[in-house]
Image (cartoon, rainbow, N blue to C red; front, side, top):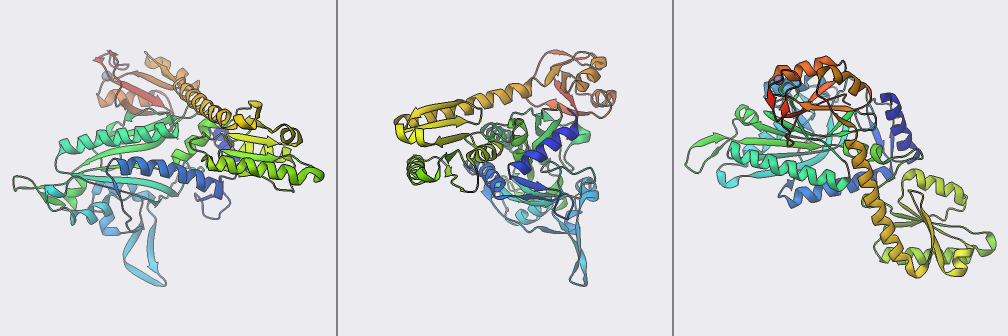
Length: 471
Ligand SMILES: [Zn+2]
């Protein structure tokens, strides 16, 4: 599958499901969350918040504007972002003394703010996050939700610690929190540790969560960075240790964006449109009454009765009684929106006190109203389990084990990600990256170890690496 066709298909799904509008607003790289998409986004944010609160993170909100001298304090950091920063240079018609950046990320502002709130080891660890818009002047082709200039849903967490060891323990905790978030969202992933030349600007260790899309390209959906003392040193962010001495703070940062929503939609969709997991869907059930003028009142009453029962039972349900659309039009609309279950009620159902249940996976059955809860519950559970397993299996089938450098190109060209043993020598990683045009050595698996020999230099190693085309 060509890149263009996957993105084009994604864009069509976003439009037809009324999730997100892209390319119409007259500022390049800015998307519009429509009401239904906003609800899906809210559900994703809800899960992220739940996991972060549970693991002791507190939510904060810092200004969007960052003064030029603050942003430029950490040299590697600003070098990595310089070409992507939007600058506010005027207030009205007055030129500003100090130019202000629209935050591209918040490491500098967070260090500046929290250095004054941490004076001793007693204040540590400190774990905060915010969910905000960030701005990056992307020069590569922009893509809906995936590469935008205003990232509207940037969850960035920052933690402060008294030692490298403590910070690295938190690294593990952050990794596990992200695992839980993506597992709950039903997004499968691999977790490579990025090679030195591809780390976040200013980080000493970067581990990312990458999902492999149906065209075989990877999409980075989350990242965890160990920043060491690089930011705290330039901001002179010191604290008093237990022994009375002073040291600079050890820091982490980790982020997730609306790419999480994008990968959900891309992975689960079919040729008709979006498919939402019952646990994520803002609407789980749509009731479509099928009536003529003469029996409209009775059937509407029955449909409303079912709606009430389902609401009391805690389902997220809507009744589509729009008189201007045919039932067929409604079926098609809600299918494209990815609603897990449709309930049809017509004269036959009313007469027999039954309902027809149709799942988004096209299973249809007629059941007694008394059996509605049981049937719905099992239909939703079955759908949830089946879908999750299917997507997981599909994603992992896009990884192929490779033993020889000369085999890499074929594997990549067949729409897969190549996996191989590789030693930690940087040159071997670079060699792999250069061996197939347009690919990236995305890194060393952060967890998985398999005994073998480096694909490049044949040295014995347990490390596993990945070569892929990347979004
Ligand atoms: Zn090697």
